[in-house]
Structure formats: structure tokens, C-alpha cells
Length: 508
Ligand SMILES: [Zn+2]
Image (cartoon, rainbow, N blue to C red; front, side, top):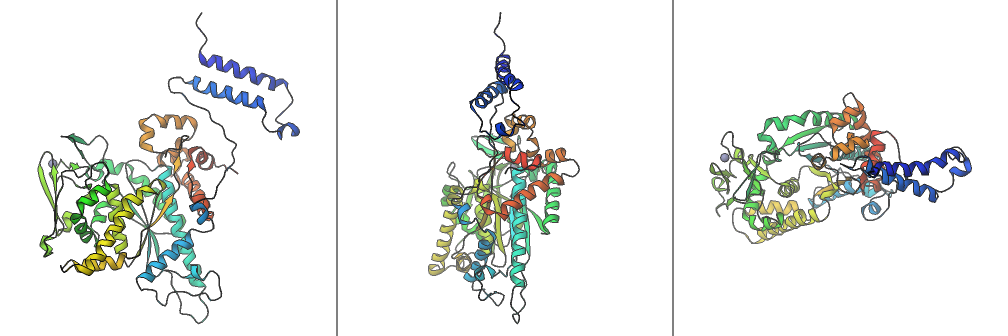
């Protein structure tokens, strides 16, 4: 006689433990028993459940974990430093940037006799809150949290500045708070899955913007989400693509610096390949291949004369059609450029620092905090600032004016970046749509009732209508984090958000 299936063994054991509950005192209603802490019998039942659950689907086993529903927001590091306020310190930092530029004008508000005087000063330049995304899926809850954070912090900055402006004393000149907006950048140069090639060990990719169907697949979902968040926050937003980014007025001078220092930057930004991952797709119609890591790029420095016609070039290589060139003097050619995440991160930060007419604040996921920024952003930025300072004092070339402007704009300043809490799975890994789909994890999330967190499309399916009801729950939860900022300096589990967002409950 074959042994009974594991599920049957586990089920019998559990039933055996449960049966006495049917005959015993009424634990559910008995006030005395209900207030008792769980006893050893409960532990046995939990163990039996943990044995039974994986046996129910041995081909793709599930595992049962339990928790007590208590939520902690422990203090330490950022959560300690910013537990009372994150918006005020940010506004102060923007004011400080204007102080460095010698721009502190009559718009500065002094609230005499108030302990809040330092925070009552407001910036005069417009403020843009940035967030970005790769449109390779309908946005999952992690991306939606970043968007909610961007619009929420924009609204909080606007409200704080309006309050401060209104507090100007009688007789003072009226103060107008600068406009606050959100700018969403689509990284439409992300690779399209299944469209790449490896030739002679070099990886080539095709980008979303060169495969129109891939880009359009999810755009409607992003439009819907951004429209809703803009309506709820009262904050206007704009959408940008990579070609807009590379068309920026400061990009050519940044690229000149990058071409001159591409060897050092390649080592700093790509520990694996040691090359700077600037790309341009092959211009031959129907080809559009780009060298993913920029390994075959050839950089030609601008001549010392620095003439407009000789501002430097990057020669890219197509494995099928040979070399093609981007000349820095040609904006239409520069707009063809693409960059991988670290290079984009650096170039974007440089362009934000060089813009002395607008404040730029970025919101991104907490997985970019820490060593990533220190190695890929702050170290190269420090080298850039040092170069600008040294060039200003020693260079005699016509590029001195660029270096002088760079040195003046960058001195003492660093990017303003806010990090949104990560959404993590049971193991603490970041929720990632791509990985979940590949590993069959999405089916498990559906089974466990958390599938609506995988994408806005699934969230909309869960709540019906235009998906506003589900997004509204995320928006309100992020609003609670901003109101109690220590909640911004931690991660949130799928299970936590399942309860709060999908089931409309609370953990207290
Ligand atoms: Zn080609």
C-alpha cells in the first residue's frame, strides 16, 4: 500500500489539532480566554498549517508566514533626523542654493521673533519635482508610490511657501511664492526585451522609442495615473522624453566635459566594462541597433580652438552598417544620444546644477540611495566641480568661460534627491514586475490576493472603473508618510500594502 500523500498527512495532523477546539471552551467569545497570549497549542497549530500549505501545491509550493499585525516605525538615521519635517529642510536647502548664487533678494521673508524664521524664507526660483520611469510595463505599486510622493511633496512645498508668504508682516512688500510643478521623464531608451543581439561579445539593444508598438502599449496607463495625481494635488505636470532631455541648453557643454574625461568616467560609472555607456541607435532605417555599453565608441575631443564646428564628436559602431557620428555642434544629432542609468543620472544632475533659474528636486526609489549615488554621482560630480575650479584659474583656452560658469553654478551645491520607500517581498527583495513575471511569481501573487499591486492595469481590474479608487488608496497612504516623515525612511512589504491598498484596511 503506497504511503498517503504529504497533503493528507499534514491535513490529518492539523485536523487532529483543531478538533479539540470544537469541543472546548468558546475561545472566540470568552473574554478571559481571548485576552490570554497564544499558548503552546497555538504554536502547534501554526506549525501544522506551515506543513500543510506547501503540500497543497507541491509543483510550485507556497509557504505560510504569520505576523502580529503590529507596525513599527523605528527611529534611526534619516527617520530620526527628519521625523518632524522633511519639507522645511528641503525648502531651506533651496533657499541656501540661492544664497550661494548671491540671489537672496527682497523676497526673503524674515518673521521677526519667530523660532521658525529660518524655515519661513522661501525660494524665488520656480521649483520642478522630477520623477522618471521606463515604460516597459504598466506601472506597479513601487512606481505609483514614486509618482504619489512627487506630487505630494510638490503640493506640500507649495502649501508651505504660500503659508510663509502670507505671514509677511504689515508694511512688508508682498511676496509671491514661485510656481511648483512635476516633470515626468520617460526613459524611452530602455531596451525592448527580445530585440537585442550579441555580436563578437558586444551587446546591442533596440530601444522603446525605436519600437513604437512597445512604447504605446502602456502609455495610456501612465497618462491616466498622472492626470489623476495632478488633479488631486492641484500640481501641474509635464512629460519629457530622452530626446527632450538631450536637447537641453546645457547638454553640449556637459558632453564636451564628458568627451574629454570619458576614460575616467567610464571607469567610475561602469565597474564591469570600464566604458561610458553613451549610445546612439544606428540611423539605417529598420536597423536601430545601439551598442548597449558603449564599448566600441570612439571619442574625439574638441580642438583647443573650441570652434563651434569642432565641438567634439562621438563615433558609434553598428555591427551591420559600420560607424555613425554624433557631432556636439549639431543639436539634431545630439538628440539621438542615449545613456544608461548611471550616465543619465550624472548628466541629469549636472544639467540641474547648471540651471540657475530653476530649482530641481528628484524623487526616486530608495534602491538608488547609498553607495550607488556616492560612487556613480557624487564622486564624478566632485571631480567635475574640481575641474571647473581648476580650469577657471589656470586655463587660457576659450573653454574657460564654460568652466567659469560651471564653477560658479556648482560651487557648494549638490543635487536635491528624495528617496521613496521600496516595496519588498517576503524576502526583503524589491518588488519588480519583470522578475515576478519571469519567475512565475505573479501567479502566486494573484493566488495570495496581492496581484493588484503588480500593475496599474491589474489595480484597475481589481477596483473597476478607471482605477482611481485603487490609486487613491496609494495616494492617501503616501500622504500619511509625508505627514509623519519617519515613515518615509523605511520599506513596506507587499503584505502591508495588500491590506492597506487592496483591502482598504489598516495596521495599527
Ligand atoms: Zn545598423
